[in-house]
Image (cartoon, rainbow, N blue to C red; front, side, top):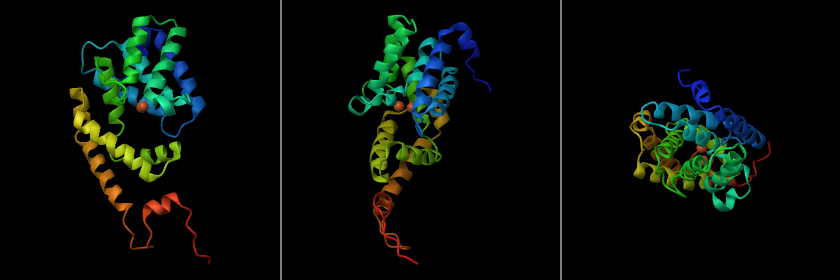
Length: 227
Ligand SMILES: [Fe+2]
Ligand SMILES: [Fe+2]
């Protein structure tokens, strides 16, 4: 694997402490999608993007990616959003790990800005994290990950489509911040967005095969005929 943490850990051994703490937090939650595997995918993408940019402050970028979704581990995420809840948790955790205030604030900004909602990314590291996380949704395989998200949140397909369509629309309007992310996307985010729109239409239509719409099929118990 071309992009690894080895050199970064040699440069800043504290990264290993953050890695271990982050892994513990995500593993204790066992979420279907927002888990340590998702974080590692984002981390790899972030390192690919960062290699195309200079100068990147890896002591900010790597902890930010590792901790960006820990907000889901705190019940306050439903009220604050997992971006803001995660920033609070990361500030406490990095303080305990001996990080200086400036670095804590830099990581906190990246986490708050990773959805482009609570804050917009202002620093290069925040822009790289944002792009790496949005790229997770680029490509049709995201529809399979989408099934995991529906299960994780215990929501209907309709809930999922409303939120995800709005998010994709905002992301497409905003665009990627880095050249490398635009190249890696290659128009796949747009494909996902248009497919979500098609599914939104389909679940409101009556199917010809068994005469019930997908929305009802998903959200209600269907009384199947006995045989
Ligand atoms: Fe997130
Ligand atoms: Fe994420």
